[in-house]
Amino acid sequence: MPIVPVALGARSYDILIEDGALDRAAMHLARFARGGRLAVVTDEQVAQAQLPRLTASLESAGIAVQTIILPPGERTKSWGQLEALIDRLLMLEIERGDHIIALGGGVIGDLVGFAAAILKRGCGFVQVPTTLLAQVDSSVGGKTAINTGAGKNLVGAFHQPGFVLIDPTTLDTLPPREVRAGYAEVVKYGLIDDAEFFAWCEGQGEYLLSGDPQARLHAIEKSVRAKAAIVADDERETSGRRALLNLGHTFGHALEADTGFSDRLLHGEGVAAGMALAFRYSARLNLCSAADAERVTAHLKAVGLPYDLASADVTGNGRTLVAHMLHDKKMAGGTLPFLLAHAIGKTFLSKDVLLDDVAAFLDQDRQ
Ligand code: NAD
Ligand code: GLY
Image (cartoon, rainbow, N blue to C red; front, side, top):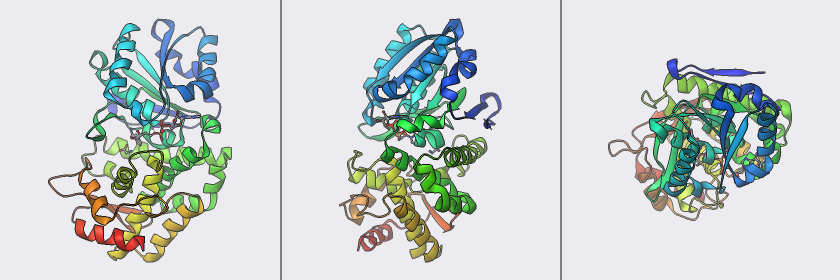
């Protein structure tokens, strides 16, 4: 049973990755049940698909489960849902020493994590991620947030969970499109600094996507280890290392904005096309070889992920897309840091990208 530690001094915690762990949740979560009870927050779809496994295990161990079920979807990461959640947690008399269980994808994890960060000036929480994206990325590292009218993830806190329980079998009920979108974040770790893992993705990614347990476990563990190492090194994204996790996100954010942050383009799909664009733009600048950029594009295309503006269903032109990028929260001192690559597995942060040139590239890339 792989246990991946996240080494953060007093805020250190473990990530357990095990098929069937949800059915044995009591074994791992009993220590968080103060007074013999646990509050579990989830969404309606996860409540149907996975919550019964968790409650069966906890109740069979004599732990009372207090469930809060929220609507599914990105819109739940809002001021309104945060306020309602906090009110309900207060009614349950959650104390600072308590842990709230977040069962769901990145939406539930981000919202519950933020609620935990501000409730009673900070109480504990445990991530039980049920999407591939959440298992390989959002449940680890303590970034929590809600969205506002001004943009995504603009209000939040760094607040580390006390434990992360990953059961890859929860992905059996996740719609294939959501699995594929999460897979983009897996590929991302290879592209950032692990060319060997990218080659593994090229050979084995399709097995992971079709639910092969070995491939799934391998990819999740590899991703989580990569993320845990980066977070331990640069918890608050100050040294630049954690920023590498945003590979594909600046382009991706613009594509998501162009498609209205809607089901037309899921976050992971935007990241996929964004990574392909980042590599092709790096090739245009002669920073990386055209062959590497082509390999990235070919793999994303082969697994059915978007890899350019057309496949991402994006209609905006270069100028419009760059305007979306300028609204991105990653703007620093009037410049927009861009993640580019010298090669597969050699991503770096560039601070001198010319936005007019990016706009021209996007228009040319579309042709
Ligand atoms: P999500 O939480 O909306 O889940 C996607 C859909 O799948 C939802 O409809 C949900 O109800 C359903 N679902 C989840 N698990 C299921 C299961 N096992 N079976 C059936 N249905 C299931 O989306 P997501 O892709 O997991 O997360 C996206 C969010 O994550 C975004 O808000 C993004 O900003 C955030 N994010 C955060 C970080 C971070 O570091 N905190 C990193 C990346 C993304
Ligand atoms: N997903 C980006 C980060 O955790 O920093």
